[in-house]
Image (cartoon, rainbow, N blue to C red; front, side):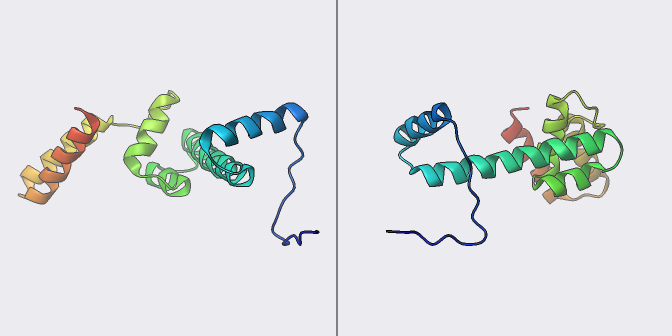
Length: 125
């Protein structure tokens, strides 16, 4: 039986060791090998986009929101990614939340204060 391939399919040659590793992971994860490969490729693409955006931010080619948008993550997560790489991104998450609280007080916006409080709880601050 032959299988028709779509034009958008790719072939990934694997070494025997890589093939066996894939088989073992497939068994442990209860996923067929094709689904597992797709998962790995998607995760790799996400990591690549975050890394690319972090380098572009460090070079001054993207601002924080642009880096987050390119990466497909929120500004808060992008700030954490930059921090993990030792890239100064301005205020820390805690400083950012303090700024939100100040805005909430200055403009009497209770919803903004609630968001800052929820974010602090999520961050464990």
